[in-house]
Image (cartoon, rainbow over all chains, first blue to last red; front, side):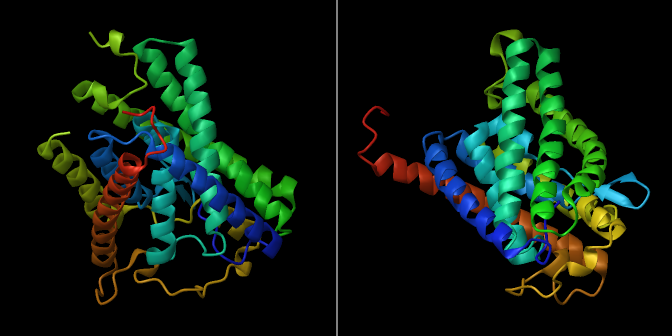
Length: 215
Length: 105
């Protein structure tokens, strides 16, 4: 859901650019406190993997595809701050090197996927793991949070398009949400599959997994 | 993380970019599809503000579309690994040298 240039009005892209800069300052400051010898290489791998996975569009219905966003995936391994940083870096590289997402719209894209996608997804994930503290509950939380993160990002994207006068807000939401509810299923499947694979090999890389359950 | 583990992680990402990207669905994504259906895709500005090196995930100079995508995916994945690693390293170094956080050891 990388917004290209031309779809957002000047007030909307200018506001979202400013909001994204403010968010990036906060995200960078908070991330700084968390890096250590284990998470530094993992941050590199997460950036590389999310970039690669975002190239893989999977069909969701006739004529429409979607791809992993990876916000919850990154947050489950690296926490919400570094997760937001990872997504932002991927979006910035995609914009400048691959022309994926507009330059004026970069702030909106960061806001939708790196701030709302990661933030809302992380909150849902934390609520889930506090309610269900076993292994099944952990996977359930990853799945639901992944799905919600995509739908939430699509909702904010629709609001930006609506406020820009590109298309009426109600109709944009009505079109965007069902499609992204389907894409979210793919997001949930891929994220949960990766988390469960790593859990079998290196459970210590998943800081939110209740470690006492592993034995 | 051990060096071998880092290489495995990066290797998986590179494999996804090189092997899977050429067979990814060519259909428009959720937003593009809505833009097409609702008739506002004509508003999309095709001409970029700053020309990208690999527009639309195509490496310039490679004629085959699938190879072009695979090579640009390889380059982007490698770049993001070093970008992410470098940024994390830089931020950690800044934290270590900053005296404003006495509570952190």
